[in-house]
Length: 266
Image (cartoon, rainbow, N blue to C red; front, side, top):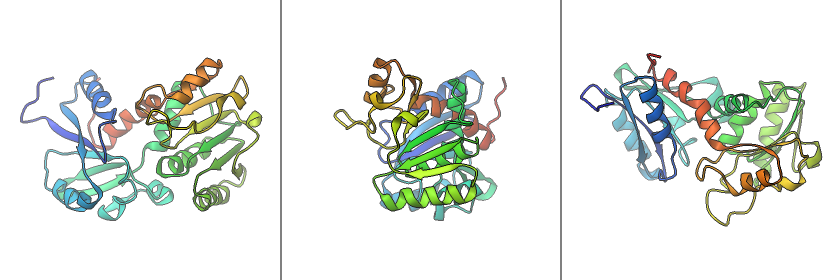
């Protein structure tokens, strides 16, 4: 689609942004659904975030934007309103600009992750999910997965206090779910999820050892670039079902557009 003066501007803000898949994926989604908009990557360092957000308030042809590392927490006090999901997760990755420059935030990581699992034929209800990583994305995933009614969730993080806080909050809100921390017996795990940055760079250690999983377990990675991480390469070599990070993004595309009021024609 040709870019004109009527074309709307959307973006992902992060530091860095060279690994982003959203500009390509959302660009294809816009073209498929005949939405007159473009999606860019805005490289914004932490020290410039507040000034940059202030400038976006004045941009009338900006319906919204998303946020990635390391700004998912720092963006919250710069917004006018946030959803209950944001308050629960302590992170925000989706912002809508309303008339007058008012900014309203939500988080789509978790619900997009669940949508990606469902699209891959993976159900969470009644199963044991092991979540490796309790940062912004991991926290959103934990809450969204809990909404699906799993039998158990085990959470591990390099920061024990962070993993314990998340597990305690989910356990309190969902007493019917068995919520534990640390490294479980991997033979009891149905779905193992990497929600850490480990795998973004060559030589990164595996976040977990897929060979220790049951043959019918599912290995999931939320990293989108590379599209097939070392973890998934090894898991596939073992014959395990895998779900790549692109599925999580694919699950978020319509969520992004609808939240920003970009209704598709088809």
